Image (cartoon, rainbow, N blue to C red; front, side, top):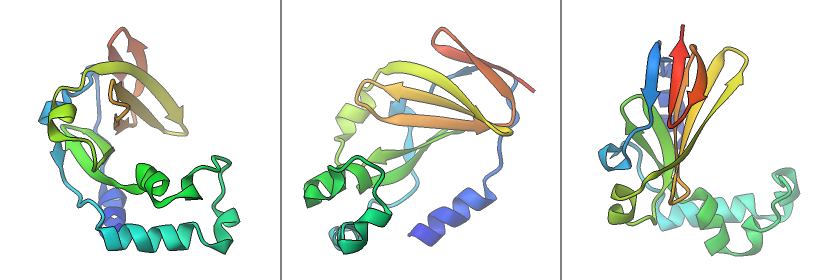
Length: 145
């Protein structure tokens, strides 16, 4: 599964955006990656939270306290809505996702890639990656090549 997702990300092209970019409605999002199985989550938990966990420690300190905490972080699948992608939580009920409302939008620029990040009221995020320069204007982003 990880190799397949890596291949998707490696061949992904960044769309050329110009003009207004609106956040997608999560009701239109389509799951394109598989949710991890219980066995995959257990294997990941045992490896990530083993005695060598200090190598992975990013300071949150909570992830490895229980399998449930680990699942909150890792039980996700790749979803797409137009040019937007996001790793959405597998435990979120379909009805909750479908009825999610846009909470906020932000733009982050790193090197040559701009990320337009849409956050929803259920805490999930969808991201558009583009080479265009974008700025937030209200509930949308304005992008120019």
